[in-house]
Amino acid sequence: MDTSSIWTMARKDLRRSLRDRSVLIFGLVVPFALMIVFNLLFSGIGSSEDFDPVAIAVAGVEDPMVSPLADILAAQLPMETTVQRLDAAGARAAVEDEDVDLAVIVPDGFGPAIQSGGSPTIELLDRGDGSIEVGIAASVVEGFVSQLALASRTAAAAGLAGLTGPAIGDLASEVAQADPLLSAVPGAVADEQLTLQGSLVAGQTALFMFFTVGFGVISLLEERDQGTLPRLQAAPIHPRSIVVAKTLTSFVLGLVATAVLLGAGSLLFGVTFGSVVPIAVLVVATVAAATSLVLVVIRIARTAEQANTMNSILGIGLGVLGGSFFPIGGDGWLARLSDLTPPAALIRGLGITHGGGGVADLAGPLATVGGFLGAAVVLSLVIPDRELQA
Image (spheres, rainbow, N blue to C red):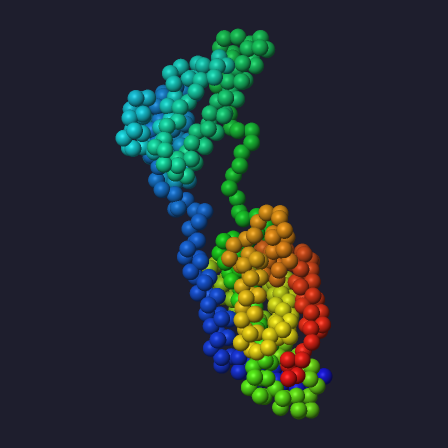
């Protein structure tokens, strides 16, 4: 093959593609627009700003064992919380009148019952609207009661062990006021897992990669439809050089568009994907896999219009299946099939680099796109190219 001719044809096609508004629209404008729209829709998910304020009435907190409950509810809930200290009748009335969202009613003699190993009951009343805020508040109360239940069991065990009177009460109080033996604290996003904004950028980049790479190779069919392909084939150029030049054009377009989308998306949404070298290796491999799929498309399609339609259907299908819009979870056959797509490999690989992984850690995603690339290349060689020779 003539390398000089390949580069000449590729440069010509690249210049023509840059002047084509369709390339800029589908390669950059549309994915950026979707990133912005999705970010506006989902940017607040997971933050405390999503919760509505909640009002809670607590009755019976005069008991020394229960007195910390009001402060815990005011301090630990993720939403704006108002705590009112009422008697039992007032707390019930406040819920019925919808002045509060939740009432926590502690019965009389609760503390002494705990200290003696008894099983008193704290009553929770809510308005019945099923709000998530009330559910969170109730969970905090249940956690507090669980600690007191441990104190009650400790008191009962102490009585069976022979302790008497004040010693049992002191031990139960000490257990009730102790810090939990096990606790969970919020932390950063787990390694190898992208943030929400990072997933939006990576997903839309992976999806529109298929549209971008299609502009180069599919132009081969456009050349045939316009009558310029026979003239190229009549020139002293090896026929495969024409296909290689178109493939190179697709690859460069996909590489540039992917790099721009990831880079600009990172700046626009404040996300990071890790070190440049492993990201570059992953992007090159994924773009090559996407380009190989277009080689199969042009062997099947009879016209450029058919090729564009097929490429769009396959690109959207693989993008949705690969998690460009939402992840495919579970362990069923659909989830396993999703893992074999280039979009899923790119998103998973960017999660690995985001967690600090290097090229060696990308073995799984690279194997996925390598297998996809190999299968597509074999198909493109097996399927006859009689339409291009027509």
